[in-house]
Image 1 (cartoon, rainbow, N blue to C red):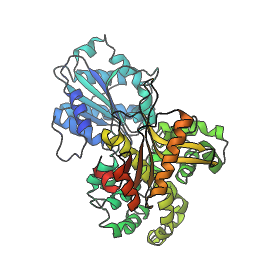
Image 2: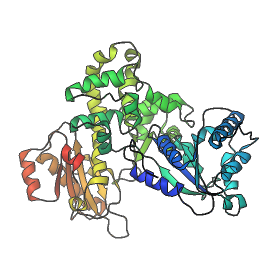
Image 3: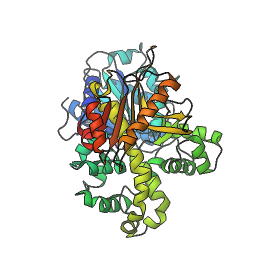
Image 4: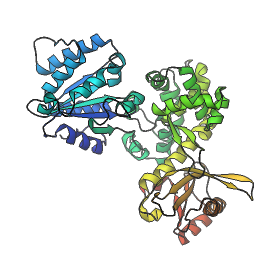
Length: 490
């Protein structure tokens, strides 16, 4: 399988899918492909089927009988049969799927699989039975069946716990969103501050580039106009996209509550207590909604690495965060023609404080986790990377740290690999360094971590003072990360 020339990145995902589809070993095999919506899963799987002569079937919302009828029609088209096949149940359809691989490996993709299980909940058990290790039909087949879906709560349950397909899949492939470096390349933006701001709005979801027909800011001066025309304009497909993402997830039945929870997180209420206060519910009432939103891929639970049982909640998709912080509060006004250009200047301070700042902190943590070299961190292996809080008893204050990187929990005294601060619009200086140094000392005494080689990482889009540059030049444990290093360096 040759990766299509018009496919951006996805080298790793394509290679794993190719190994699965071209595996010539006897016996049918099962794969599961998942990921958030609009990431290019269908494009990836359709390309694989085109190159291998496989069968691609995309389910739609339909009754069980109608879904079987459409699959029978698609199978007939694939085989060149004169009439559609008629199946009375999915057991017959799966049997026909196994028959496709009687002579050679043949991939078969059932895309939007959650639509099928919604009306035919027995389908996973049918697949389990057909793919039993001692079933003769399965042993004689080389069919490579791929189940794909974007409803993460549904796909996550397929292989979990006591689910019927637990232990049956030989491929579990997640198609992730593009990281901020790849997203800049994909959008073709050379100016780094501009690329970071665009990523804050649309993230690394490839489909949004197509939604806008390639419209991107022509220059930094065009960013405000681009936001107004591409996202805040009621005629733009991105204006209501966050609403659609929420409505397309089958596990989110109380859309009003879930939308309010997301709005609370977007406004800065990131603890369970803060979210509860925002939505008018008790903290205990939010345990289930928060879990559901996390399972569906809308929220990410970020544990405080320095304090037990102090998690924060963050929105996983930048456009969802942008919508709930910027569009939702002004939806009625923005829904009127011509209002976006006039309202954006009044919304921009909120964008800087509630959206851009927290997003930039996340980019900094990603740099430490994925791009910083062992030489920079003074460590070959990392354990956890996240945020943390340490109490300063003498100063009667809690020091919040944007970046906390710990070494592996290998039974020895755990290392504090790095502490960091990330600021979008602030020039960082010696006072910021001293704050990190003080926090490092507190952590060493309060948490018992090894701080002898801890790096102090300062990340800023606005730059650093001359005296901080001088200190960093003399001490390799001080790491300064500007936008150029964030995007290109290690």
